[in-house]
Image (cartoon, rainbow over all chains, first blue to last red; front, side, top):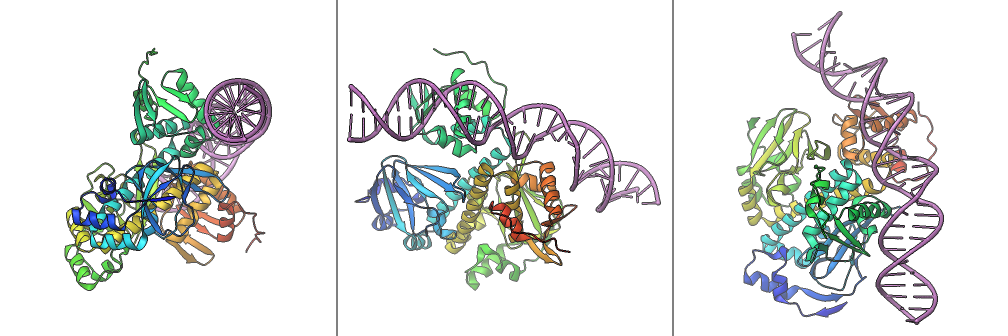
Length: 241
Length: 241
DNA sequence: CGTCCCGTTTGCGCCGGCGCAAAGAGACGC
DNA sequence: GCGTCTCTTTGCGCCGGCGCAAACGGGACG
């Protein structure tokens, strides 16, 4: 992990620091530690003491929780501008999951003590963190309800739609999930197996709704996916070509 | 809902306000609205604008999220001393679930604006809220992993163990969950049906692990339940009588 | 360029648990 | 006390999806 000089412009873009004045931002920049993180790096591990508050400047980080039997849940993908590991610092002090760099990244971090002082001095930071953690709580609650009450196909549709919103990139024939996403990853987000995900995606591909690829999904008919997710009648889907 | 005079002692006991000095607590008491809430009351509804931050002084509140198809998830039970609906106020401003009084309750609330001002003036409140919401996020993430990766029996065991920690009351032959808890409630916490919960509990009852009853569960052998939850070899369980 | 590894796809038997149906017991209101 | 409603229990057929196995193809690496 290679240290870098903090870039004030990118720190200013972090959601955690929105609404702060120039003096506050200057202090935040002064105490920030910025670095490159190579693809595949474990930034922190489940069960470790939560010593640092992290945020991502560039790249993509996967947050994965592992149970005692080795089974994994993909909790979340972190994109540029987002914090991670911060809630743990203020809630119990143990990271509840691993943070893995999916691609080469640029990250920034603060010690727990520094962030605590910043929050006491600038309550806006604490309120922003509360907003972020509260939204994540709502999302996870929604996923819990989906997993409790919906069949796999709908769950996969919901998961893909969330990913499109978070990491969708327009390409020629649809919207691509803009980072490597395997069938196993999708399975670990939706409580199923890679085989089931593969079968579902193959079926949708046959209907022109998605286009698959190795660690890759492109959504060609988002509205069809919404209909599946919401268990609505399917619109007629002309085969586009 | 019958207004009451705020009781400073019970407000002081709220987790949200721990670590505050007397001046802060006096201000909190001044702006608090306390009232009785009858059993069965809907305190707020899913989809409503999140206008009030709530906390419970006495009683038990169930937080339930309902999907578009009417299927329900029991998100959480709120006990005395706990806040509820507060995260929603600071995260998007819409309540994501209903809050229902399970028994007669005493509740307290503040307007969103008042709580926002209190948090700006006393950052400790925001940090406490962050701690509480962060712990809830961790719990829901853990439940999501359990639901994704464990069979029903283990999930029910985990759910009962959580309830024991939260609302367990020692009685003559074990630990009772100290509020009305139906098989349907347990099912809605664990992503299964009431029939499956009933079958599991009947089986455990036959082994002396629990004792059932109408809207009632008493855990007689907590260690056996832990072994089930963690998929450990079962200890020999002598039939106590 | 060749080889190896990993990800994807597909067939299929099996199983956990859903959900219908019915019976019984307890709580509640008149 | 009686009637009604709700909750719990249990039998059982059915189905969604798990997980084993095998084949194929693409990408990474030497």
